[in-house]
Length: 209
Image (cartoon, rainbow, N blue to C red; front, side, top):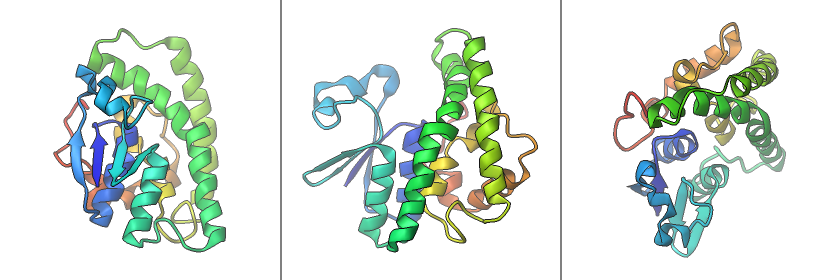
C-alpha cells in the first residue's frame, strides 16, 4: 500500500491510524506548495487533487475517513468495529465532525495558520468570527458527550476519535477556542499518550506545517 500525504489536517488522521496500526504502507509525501497534487499522474488516481490518497493494488481510495476505515479493516482492528450498532455510531460521529466540528475548525486552521505559512494574506475577520462562533457551539456538544464517555463511541478508541481530534494539536496555531472545554482537554490528553498521535507523520512534524 502507498499512502500519499502532506503535513496537514486530513492526512494527519490517516497517517496517525496507519502508524497506530503498524500498517504496511509506503509513505509518499506530496509537496502541496509545488502543486504536486495537480500532476496528471496524481490526478489519475485522485481527480480531486487532494491528499490523503491510499493506493492498495487496484484500489485507489481517497477521503480520509474511508482510508482510516480501510486501514482498520485490513489490520483486523476494532478501530472500525465489527458490531453494526457501533459502526453506525462511528459513522455518526465522523459525519458530525466533517459537517460541523472540523468544518469550522478547519476554517480557523486555514485562516490563522495556513494563510500566514503560505503567504496568502491576512485572515478574513468575518470568516474567523463566524467559524469561532460555530466551533464553540459544536465543541459544547462534544464536551457534554465526553463528560459521560472516555471516547466518542463508548469506552473504546475508534477512527471517530482520530477524525474529530485531528485539529487539536494545532489548537494554538489555529486559534481554536478550546478554553474551558475540560472534557475535550482530558480526551485529547488521552490521545496524546499514543505515540502515533503525537508524531503521526513519517518525519517529525515541522514547527510551521
